[in-house]
Amino acid sequence: MAITEETVKKVAKLSCLELNEEELHKMKQQISDILDYVEQLSKIPTEGVKPTSHVHGVTNAFRDDVVKESLPVEKVQKIAPDFRSGSFCVPKIIG
Image (cartoon, rainbow, N blue to C red; front, side, top):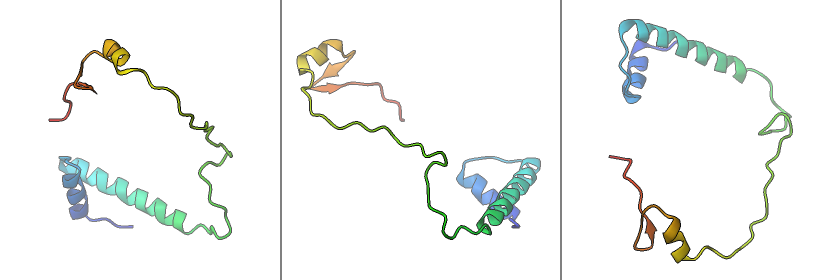
């Protein structure tokens, strides 16, 4: 599947990537290769194939939810580095 340089530039801009001409050409080719491969995969007949999330039959080992007593607030306050007004205080990480 052909992809235009304008499309690659738009995707790069949306991804906050700055690409020089060499990178732009390389990215265009890589995206085209990926889309060609996806097109090949879409031609594979899958009628009657049971949908699966794992090919090996792996399942999650869930446990039953059991309601238990919580730690008392006083005990949590003692072990927390910074606890004020009934809440954990953590450093701001998002500007």
